[in-house]
Length: 173
Image (cartoon, rainbow, N blue to C red; front, side, top):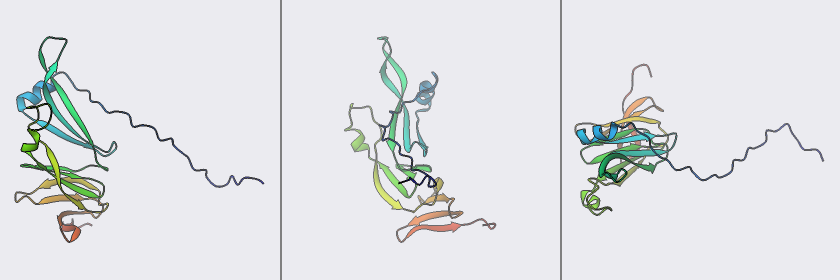
């Protein structure tokens, strides 16, 4: 019996283990982060990661004593794009959800190694939005989260009864 070759053949891809992620930085970056006393949160929807970047003063370099290096934590989220921070809150906009994380200093104090962590953000609320293509987000002065909803061409907020609530739409949409 002849095989029908007019139909496209399904490609199968092997399930390969995910390659570990690492970071590379310029030599002046740890000092800059230390001087400004900052950390950085970055999202990359292509890799499905939220990356937490901070300077680390406990590293040793060739036995010459403490040195400042960078420390990166990679956390998996489904297509994270928009990020917003206000006070002790961090919002992460994913493909179909918005995660609201709160800093829990009491938990940070218990993390190993002792005294190294000044913050620990834990999930406090997850809001299902559907696939609205969240590209940017910001907390307003009153603490309400505003979202750039590119799928529906509007600025929106969240409420308990809807996936999202449109607040503004440009006149040309």
